[in-house]
Length: 247
Ligand code: COA
Image 1 (tube, helix red, strand yellow):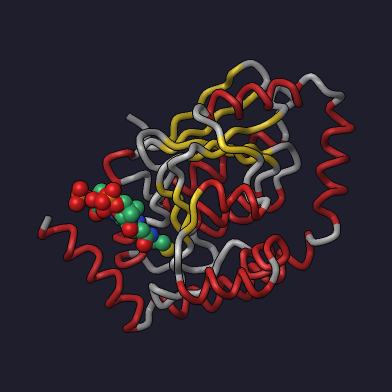
Image 2 (cartoon, helix red, strand yellow):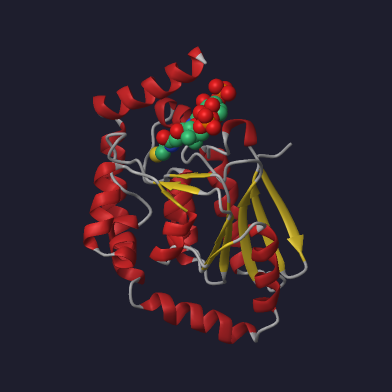
C-alpha cells in the first residue's frame, strides 16, 4: 500500500499521508511524491484545489527521524522540493488534521489557505528541543500570525498547543469533529467559484510575503541542515529511537 494515497474527488485532489503505524512520519520518498503531485496539480485544469490529510490517529509526527539520521539532507533533498511546492502552489491548499501534528505537521499548515482540525489535535514545533531551528518559513510566518512574544514562547520552550489555541491564533479555520469531511466540502464550494478569480485572489493574499518567505526558507534550510549534524540533534534523535525500542 502506498504511503501517500492519491485520489481525485470531483474537482479536488486528495493527498493522504498513509503511514499510520509510524504516525505518518514523512520520509524523503513521501516528500518527493507529495511535491510531484502538487507540481502536476498546479498545471492540471481538472484540479481546482488540493486537500492534505493523514490516515489514522495522527496527522503526522513530522520528519521521519530515521531518515534524518541515515540520509544526508541537502538543499536538493525532496523535503526542500516539497517546501518549494507548497510555498508556490497557486491553487487553494486545504488541510484536515487530527491528533499529533508535529514539526512540519504544524509548519506546513502556515502555507495552507484553509485548515480544519479535530478537537484532539496537538500542534507542536519542538525544533529547539531537538537542537534544530524552525523550518518551512515558520520563523517568519508564525510570529506574523501570533506576534513575536507568543511565537518566541512556543518556539523557545517547545510547548505544544491544542485545537482551541490554534483557533485563537488563526492557525486554523475551525475545530471540526470530521475535519476531512469539512475540508472536502469547502474544497468543492471553492471549486464552483470562477477559477481565475480564485487563483488571482490567492496570489494577491500571498503577494505581500512571497519573496520574504522564500528568503527565510533558504536561511532556515541552511541552519537546519547544519543543526542536523550537531551532537545535540543526533543525541535527541538517538534518545527518541532508543526509548521506542524499549517500549
Ligand atoms: N520518525 C520516525 N518514526 C517515528 C516518528 C518520527 N518522527 N514518530 C513516531 N515514529 C514511530 C515510532 O518510532 C513508533 O515506531 P515503532 O512502533 O516501530 O516503535 C511509531 O511511530 C509509533 O510512535 P509512538 O511514539 O509509539 O506513538 P505515540 O502515540 O506514543 O507518540 C508522538 C506520538 C508523535 C508524540 C511521538 O511519536 C513523537 O514524539 N514522535 C517524534 C516527533 C518528532 O520529534 N518529529 C521530528 C520533528 S523535526
